[in-house]
Length: 286
Ligand code: C2E
Ligand code: MG
Ligand code: MG
Ligand code: MG
Image 1 (cartoon, rainbow, N blue to C red):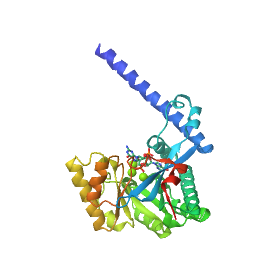
Image 2: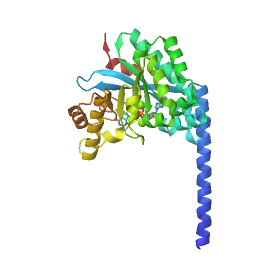
Image 3: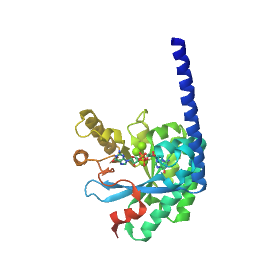
Image 4: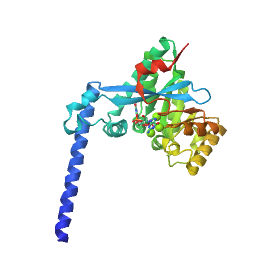
């Protein structure tokens, strides 16, 4: 009896593994086609200055067009892949380089278009993947795209996760120095989730920390999170860095963050990530 159950378990795991491998392969095929046929779009989510609720930056977040997803078997149709699902696959396969090049170019082109329309958006922010940083060439590509699109570098913000910087190893400091020399604004994303020493904060030429949503979601009732967020904000200000809180959904979270002197907030309370056309209405004219 136990022997039989063992065998059944074994075949169960084999089957589960095969299914997973098949899904993974289908996802890769779908993504490869999406890259070839440019089936991605960017949505933008505002970051809002807490003192006056002015939009001071827009984060570009990539979306996979659902139309393209019908092309790949069981993955198509009913499910929509989120960046948290497809970005890791694109990192592993190297597709991230072409995706990212498109993201940077599209965000800069859109930023230039908003400038030309006299709309005050502050900065457009893009996310960079650790694997892309390791592969190299990002700074050169960025510099070239800024020139080609005509977006002044002070209107571009780069978000890099804390974990991403540690993963990119000894080269991280130099990498950030090069970005800094381009004149772009640098933010450490998902701050607080890294496992690293904080010593890097005084060496890296970053301007802003973005507190991870996991510390924000249970505010203001969770005292531990309240303490942590309060400490992160004082520390950031001590180092003359700006602080953004991500994932702000409720007015009482906003009030709590404001009372601690947090500079900027982002989250569903203000807006979900939306297509560029919807963003124009939220911006003031010069
Ligand atoms: P992230 O950069 O930390 O972005 C924040 C994520 O939280 C976004 O998810 C955003 O839609 C979501 N979010 C914003 N406000 C709220 C809120 O109030 N409540 C909740 N529950 N969620 C909120 P999204 O767009 O699914 O992106 C997930 C992650 O995928 C991003 O995390 C980023 O790491 C990555 N990503 C997205 N676009 C790109 C891209 O163009 N390039 C790269 N390399 N990574 C990207
Ligand atoms: Mg981000
Ligand atoms: Mg984040
Ligand atoms: Mg994140």
